Amino acid sequence: MISLSMRKRFTSVRTYLLVALLLMFVGFPLYWMLMSSLKNSSDIVRLPPVWWPLPTWEHYDELFSVTKFGRWFLNSLIVCSMSTVIAVFLGVIGAYSLVRLKVPGKEVLARSVLLAYMFPGVLLVIPLVLVFSHLGLINSQFGLSLAYLTFALPFVMWVMRDFFGSVPVDLEEAAMIDGASRLEALRDVVIPQAYPGIIATSIFAFLFAWNEYLFSAILVRDHDLMTLPPAMANFASAMDTRWGLVMAASTVATLPMAMAFAFLQKYLVTGIGAGGVKG
Amino acid sequence: MASVQIHDVRKSFGGFEVLHGVSVPIEDGQFVVLVGPSGCGKSTLLRMLAGLEKITSGTISIGDRVVNDVQPKERDIAMVFQNYALYPHMTVAQNMGFSLKLRGADKSEIDQKVNRAADILDLRRLLERFPRQLSGGQRQRVAMGRAIVRDPQVFLFDEPLSNLDAKLRVAMRAEIKELHQRLKTTTVYVTHDQIEAMTMADKIVVMQDGIVEQMGAPLELYDRPENKFVAGFIGSPAMNFLEGTLKVNGGQPWVETANGAKLPITAAPAAGNDKAVTYGIRPEHLEFADDGIEAEVVVVEPMGSETQVVARIGTQDIIAIFRDRRPVAPGDKIHLRPRANSAHLFDKETGKRVN
Image 1 (cartoon, each protein chain N blue to C red):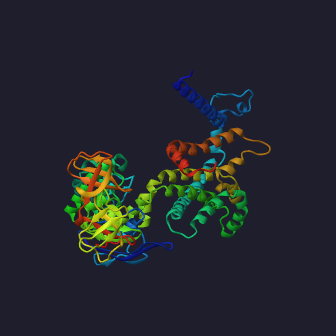
Image 2: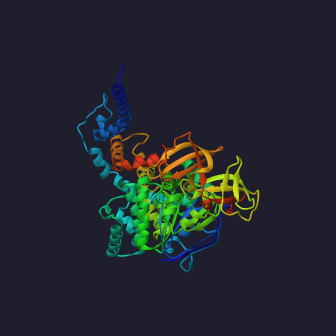
Image 3: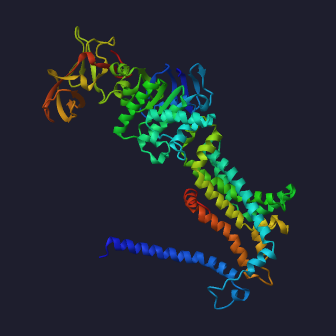
């Protein structure tokens, strides 16, 4: 007969094996990206593959000296930061009011927020182009960050609604009796309870914007204003794909998000748990 | 400090009225306890006093000022919540000083007031801790500290002891009472526990279904409840009720139960002969007497200082309390006599007191 502790050990071994398998599945593309960016151009396509290349920085050199990668990276940072800040600011206030204020029909409002989130971007992009061209927001970083609100804002609102819902109303009431206005209570008492949610939604809102290709490719045509995804897509063409360049660019583009995830993962777990995140 | 006037206050939630015209005068420095079963409207009334719920009609005044439309922060009140509502991200000192900080007090003033409150409540060594690092009793004291620091006109307590274990509850009860004797701040305290109400209040307000059933000093309510609800609600163990009919036959009146037992009373109410009444008698007002009503002992509960006996008269169980120790056992036949001058008579239909 197998003892209980044996069985427990067996279960945990099985769990670890599964996790290891999953890790390989997720990690291999990252490994391949990093390694390819460090190989010289002939090694990249060599068969059998070179698993541990002698590192060369030629692709990185070219990336920063020949292309406008630095510029595009900065553009991405600006656009994504702007849309994240706006989305989180408006989303937090909106979510809070949907939870706490007595608004007629607020349940319907809350659901329609989710409905907006479910619209595929491809459906939104044509009307957006029409509206934006009237408003002079084509080829504008601000315009692009506004376009990103179409998915970032509903997402932030939806997740933060759950967070605010879980903050006991007594805390705010205590603050208001202590002499706070509603906004002060929100700022000093409610928001600090929802920090994990704010951090998690900020990262995801930023990540969605960081990875976004379609809106950016269509709304921004000026080469100097482009964000990373459409700019990097230009590295691949019908005649020739510069794999080394693509991989180096991808590696650098992945870094900010990887670092953010690494430092803030404990908040992310809470955030995902509380909100439920679209995959 | 200030008096509080609650005058003909009503509250409706979407057309459903939960408070039906409640009036409670509260004197300056008084400790008033609102007590009643859950859903009676006591917490709603307190929240209206705090400004957390709108008043549908009627007026509430604090001091000379009608506060119906005054924001909570302008009312100069402090409130202790059932779950303490301590700010989780602030230390004890920050929790207690939060109201002063909002008011724009400078740091030395905040420190001084927080320290004074901490001394009163013995919280000095906890000032740098966070709420999650405190026990239930300590959190309760911090919540009180936060209220004291404000030096408000009125303290409001919303069932502050119901999350504590029994022993701590007794200790905190005494602590709150002592605090009130020391600060003499007008206090409104909500509880569903009639023992808290009896032990702490200057004035008890008994509520049920959105109305005030009776208000008065604790012993006044205990000795002369105006209706059957108050009679049954105040006192533990509860008053015994026996159904019967009033018999006035020349001299001495009595109440006769369905199985023929005669329950003594001192004087007949105006109601008259053969009226259906409920006879109420507190457990400590039953005594052993050979000419008493025959009852069969069901359960004996020795408490040390006293003994509770559950006995059956006909089909009805009653509880009697005796200070002296008697060798009674389940199954014994005993004879109990209610003290006639301690009997309470209520109209069977309306529940109103008739003697």
